[in-house]
Structures are given as C-alpha cells and as structure tokens.
Length: 144
Image (cartoon, rainbow, N blue to C red; front, side, top):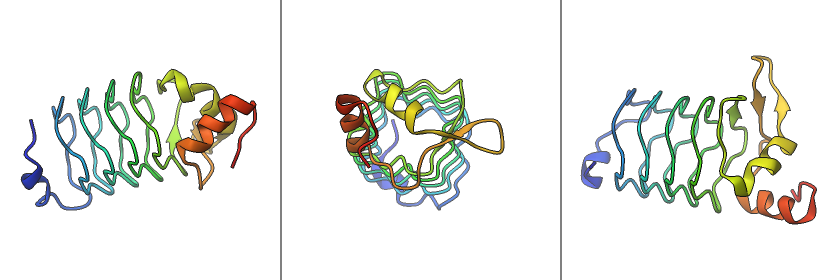
C-alpha cells in the first residue's frame, strides 16, 4: 500500500505504468499528467485526487473511491470502473473507448453525453461533473 507521505514526492507526469496500487490510500494525491497505463488501483481510495490529464488507459479502478476526484482531460480508454464511486468527480473532457467499463449508475448517461473524437474513441463535454450524470439518469437528458 502506498504511503501518503511518499506521494508528496511524486512529480506531475510521473511514470507509474503497471504500478500495483491496489487498496492504496491516495486521497488528495496530486498526480496530474501521470502515466498510469495498466496500473492496478482496485479498491484504492482516491477521494479528491488530482488525476487531470493523466493517461489512465487500461487502469483497473474496480470498487475504487474516486469521489470528488479531478479526472478532467484524462484518458480512460480501456479502463475498468465497475463499482467505482464517481460522485462529484470531474469527468470533463475525459476520453474513453468501447472497452471502458463504467459504473452502472453513470454508464448510460456517459454514453449519451459522449461525442466521437478523431481517434475513433469518445470524449465527454468539457464541463461535466458526475452530479450532472446522476441528474441525467433521473431525467433522461443531460442536465448540464
């Protein structure tokens, strides 16, 4: 498990490819532009973490707590978010693909809000927070 004090020394854009951070306490971690391709973050606690612009492709976030996390501009292509808590998370300008697995609570709304990008994947609108997604599920339309 990662020690929160160690995270203070991780520079933006850090290379954490294939890192095993399963169950790690990373609340408030500042990891903008980090490279976490295929990392294991199953059950990790990432409340209020800054993962903006990070490469999170192939990351396993199964049952992770990403509440109030900033994922703005991150790449979630192929990421597994099944059972993850995304309440209050910033998903603005996030890119993803058909392989990305979303929590049931937001999957339909995410797919309705997404627009195709130039790489054959999808991108979410620039100002999208998960409370809007929750509202979308209730109303059947994006409540931005």
